[in-house]
Length: 538
Image: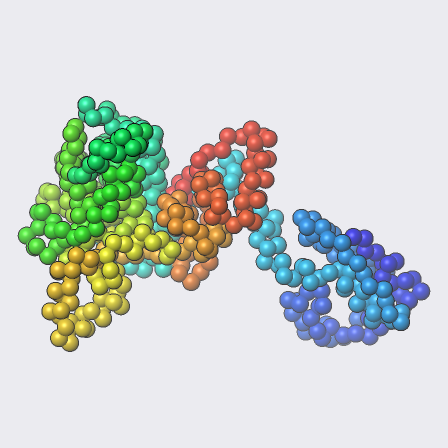
């Protein structure tokens, strides 16, 4: 589209246009930029020199360049209507129609999202050569606060920067558990498993123990006849996580203590899915209170030993006791982290080790997308043992709403207060009977950090269930979270590579198209692309 002075302002009429413009005063906003505020100091008539032929030509040339950039992706032919009666006003109208400003204003948001600055940030998040590292601040004497001694009061909304780094870091320990399992999922039925190597996300930690979960049920024999190639999907015992301990003096000094991490992955085998469906509440074997109950399937995976491996509960207790003895006299903490099924088992592990020995170090659970595990009396049991739980929940994640019904839901403070008031009003016996005897009266545990897929500028607001429950999507949302009423932070540093690869269909097309073009450019340069960049905790 060619726009020039000669096409819109004939030379013989140019002096008329300049004279009329010189008589105008800048009392209104610019017709080319409705967002421009009136200039209070421009109430004097403008001199005709301001509207010289040269300045007009430069102004139109700049607009022409802007339109060429805006319409580059979708070229559109604009046909200008001929002027009527040859008036200057109609010539101005022809000029505006030729500029087609109606196409600029509705696209302001998209143009802003793909501005050079935004595109550079997207390229950085998809690039290896431009990695950014967030400094790890010293937690020092405040480590107990970040570990949940005050239930993370004042740190969640808005989300404290140091806590964000810690949450993302513990989520990456769970990712390492997933990678460690899928690299070698098969378990021999004839001999004990060999020691397993796991690529930990933090080099200051070392793996000390592999953990296994075993189902108490098995598939019928006819399953092997119908589907003989399922392989490891039908095995009863599977590697589910690990224990690691911080072994770097500088990191111990930064964190203010030596940290023991227990990381557990989510559901992977058919047997684990079968246990997930055993959703009735059963009594905790070691509890003196028969009203303290947890989900049957989770308890089975926690307590059942395998043919050549001990139960998850036994392995964890044994290793925690050993590490406590090894580092006796040092300041220790125990952090249990898991996703989905791993989040549920994390609560049972925390309950198990909280009373396994005298003077157990402070225990905190960081769970991602975890389902409900037990009833309200189980929640009270963990609270009495001073187990601190931070539940990271996605608004659109359905897994966090099962199993059970709303009666026992204890995570909502308003609902708890309402139930207390109703108990005080004489309904106590009724509610206690429901909580204690209803096999579906589940309740969430701990403090909640709620994120939302719709807050991400990269994910579709109607992303499917798999994306809303995906661990990488959780870490992406936490990394960008500022507060419940603020948008996704613009300086988020977590790489988008893994998110694009795993959730391409749930990414906004604006970004998938750009990421594809950037990937093509990198392929031409033959630059290896890592699965994900270092986390904001580095």
